[in-house]
Length: 178
Image (cartoon, rainbow, N blue to C red; front, side):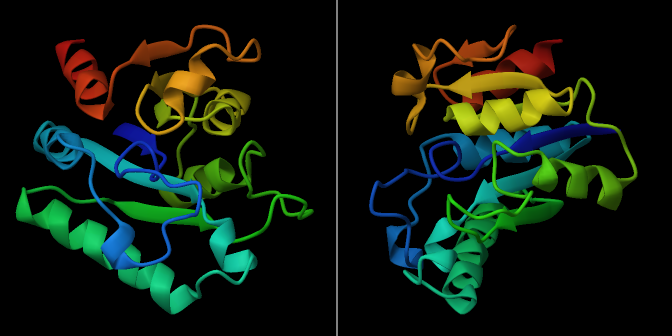
């Protein structure tokens, strides 16, 4: 099975330091939705793994998170793409949960749901926590320079062998060329 794990904010859609709190604030990064559709067309299963602490902070509820994700899924379908699953952590940063990236819990949930090892599976993020979570379960880390990526690029804790690309479309180009 060809599988890829994507972060949401800063990878698929524009990020905000004030959080994405409504469907109106969810704006796709140019080319990201078509990139996912290209993966689907080439037999890839695309899974989302996203920290959504805005829920735990009370900035928005589950109904609003579902509405935001519905907008994303609908816009993706308009270009012929789909997500095979959406995993998220609703907890705040100081939570003791195991699902908030950089902890591996979300990725372990993906392994269990799909009955696979994520060893060698590409994971794409714009922040250090995305890449560290992936690396902790053996994923191949890909940093995109959208969202927080430019800032993350110079972090000395970047996992070894992290590949850096300008955006998700460029990552997909590289993966499909392999």
